[in-house]
Amino acid sequence: MNAGDGAPMVRFDVGRRLRIGLAEAVLADVKSTEQIAEAINQAGAGGGSVLVTRLLPERFAALPKTQRALLDYDPVSRTAMTAALAGCDQQVLGLDADIAIITGGTADVPVAREAARTLAFHGVASQEVADVGVAGLWRVMEHRELIETMPVVIVCAGMEGALFSVVGGLARGVVIAVPTSNGYGVAEGGKVALGSALASCAPGVAVSNIDNGYGAACIALRALALRDRVSPADPPPLQ
Image (cartoon, rainbow, N blue to C red; front, side, top):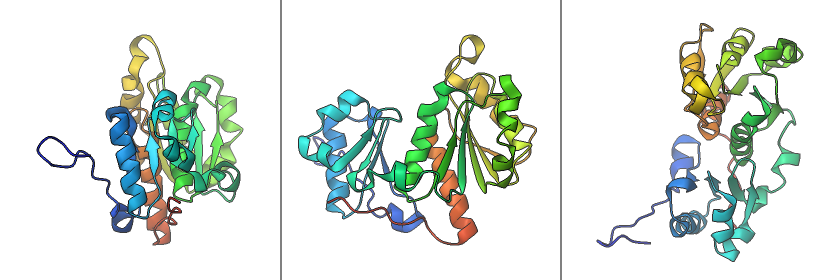
């Protein structure tokens, strides 16, 4: 698909996986349906798989039937990925996981699922622990052993974002804070949680942008690649 001057409107980066170990994702909420479809076509033409983020159900339904048949769509995380990975939840999540994904509340699960699906797309296992916010600190402490032993812990939380410092004070591995936009009053929109993550007194906490589960997963993948001196496994190609 080209713009009026002949320049392409979409240029999918098929070589990114080889350069940095992370495949390009298609960010759907800033693209038209036609542009999303073109990006998927280019990914397939390049012999690669595709991950689409921020894809609303109605936008997925508007894609060509042939493309929908190639993709596994999850409405909770609003992600779509190559159908060859349709069984990723059963085959990858929770099995010999090196990454834990923790949510402060049930409302944070969509962001956590975006992170989990991004990891699964790259062939990396994760274990999800939901609804362990600090309002009931005992819920966090029930998972203390997991937090202390995991190489990477992704923490998704809104409201005041206190969970980031609590986990950061327990974990020995990499801690990645993901502020979510869940909250009301002064906490609305996630900026309070973002400020708490950036101002955490727990040393060494990495921070992704608000609701950016995809970005948090990419930080985790880079950390594991550095540890193992290898890149994440190649995802299977589009059929």
